[in-house]
Image: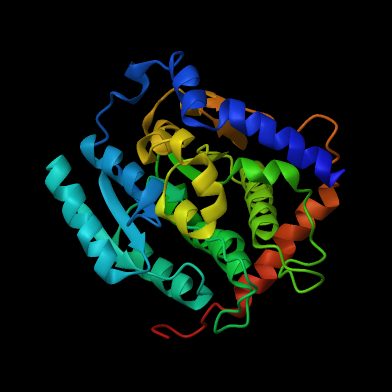
Length: 323
């Protein structure tokens, strides 16, 4: 079945996920959807120093939003911040240095952030695709720590802040690669069998879709969405998927095209007219499963995933202030 999924997905990708796919879809966009002023609203973007995260932050800054950039590298983050401020003329850009693969750091950051700022929109964009099995200092497999657990902890920790605001939103940048994966809760840290970084990443991205659906059910006052940016020419794609990049580089979307739907979900009034918990591609909700691909999972597995992540997250939550 996996060969069938992969083949169907790749053909779909060539048609929809490339630059020409974006150009075709964008003919149906309403430009007015994103011609908005979001001054006074606060946005947090993870992985914001390059690629889709930086492109998203820049577009929100252009529209007057206060933008909090959450990045791992201080040096690269400061360059990105300078570029955003210069290009947009918006001085309300703030920098926070956090490693999203480090659960203790995320908890500490979130507790501090909650005391000092308001938040209207959280954009979970930070991610990684590590092609060999690497463990973090906490003994967590790095892809899982960043893509799944990091996303879970940051969102969970900031939900009380979001709950205070009108029109609060959480957007998670996933990947169409998740369509080839069925949720697997038996081996969250990919310790069994041969390690395939691309498939581990795709599994993490499936987990993000499940997280979004579960959060949408539990938190009715917040609009949750998850999206696929298409195949975009980003530093992450170049470094993590060099063979794919070489084959596809002339057909990849720009970073801005990859970020378009994130921006639309973050700022437009049209996005929140649609139900919470959906998966988007090119400003449209799309199915989370390929036809006949057998990737549906039992609801008990989806609920169990949330329980397992909660258990993981609590292990790293400090009980004493300032530690």
